[in-house]
Length: 149
Ligand code: RB5
Image 1 (cartoon, rainbow, N blue to C red):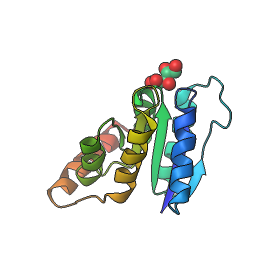
Image 2: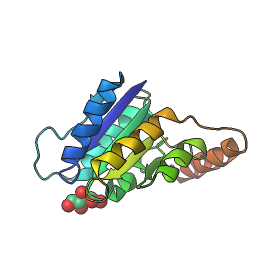
Image 3: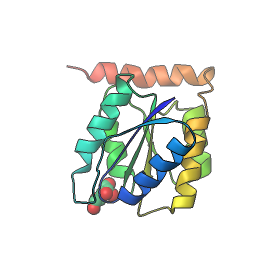
Image 4: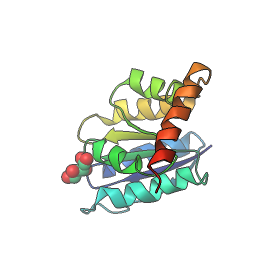
């Protein structure tokens, strides 16, 4: 499985920790920056990372900013992206099982590295349940389609 990661200055250390952890687990990780800790605008990183997931270049993505919220808002503007900002284990699990989320967004100023690595593991290890949830994901896609000009 190929995983894209990205962050702004609010999530720099955490992104690097997640990248190292996933690589240690044997995943192929594409890092969309930032590569040194400096102030950046999170939508730019979210866009690059989300595009790589939407195109199929990567299977899943993990984005980290201060809260995880700005990254999720920006990533969700990309067609085909279902990004979820999570701070707890239950949400990280069920956003895969039920929402088929393809990007996990974490807050580097909200949760510690221990929790973040566990949430990343849950996210990449859990598969979409399908079944009755498929129709709901299709309805989200229909909204997306209806918004295209
Ligand atoms: C940057 O200061 C901060 O606003 C950003 O990392 C993020 O939390 C936005 O949602």
